[in-house]
Length: 363
Image (tube, rainbow, N blue to C red; front, side, top):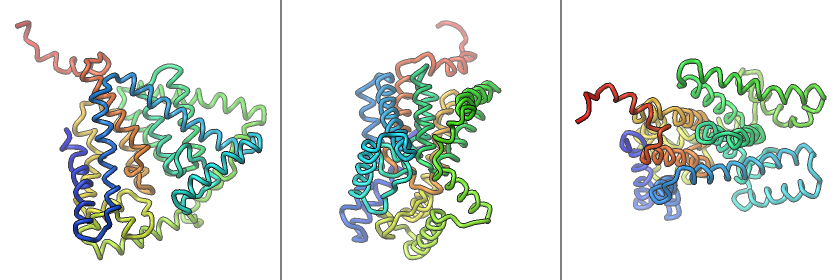
């Protein structure tokens, strides 16, 4: 399973930076990119020691609540629904945190959660929705989904919203019969009720950020060819600049391509291609489609949704390099493996039924 999924990608991401430093094209500091392999492997190794899936679910739940609550507070501050002293303190803290990393990360009109980039928070929130749907139960699941959905909106990441829709469709399509679709419709109706009540009393507009609506409108006009979006134009310029780099490094930059380029790339597909040429890009695509290859049908649904969300975000962001967000996927893998290993009935019931017809009687 490993070599039919993450194995080729992890191996290349481990070797390429070392090759870049050895060849002298990158400094030793470029070895930081090995964290993309070290972090998931660390999570897997901890999973071998902390073998209770409920412990993992609780830990992820706490992180979802912390990120979601802080992102919601950031949104309320922008909408002037918090005391000035609190909102000003939060804004100052966020700006100083972003500036400590890089001036280009300073964004004051979008929520970032406990991260420093709103697009990263958008991806985190989408994956948190998927995690909550499949690995949490009852009121905890409902509250976690609500906070994660609020995070998607508060981040104002247009690609994250598309990724959320794609992952929801994946959940419905991979479900058994029409049951998943009915549940999705019921969830939408349930979410629409409080919105209708707020609209009836005329307070819904107080919770709508003007900047979010303008971003949606600007993006739609740019996609339909009736306008220009500055963020999208900047990404296209960076992609064009990066494509010229591939002609000089036809075997790849080996080390992190953003170091060679001197700017962010904002596309995981292009970043993979620049670093390791076609082999690394194909290894990344293998990871994204691997749930359909290595997992049985009764276990692949959450990971198909995860993969589709990451694949969608990879068009306009370096999604896989977002270690915090991808940590949700790695934790979900650990929980799934622990349930199977401990013989959890919910995890193995379908597998038992699939092979029961091969039994010929007691031995």
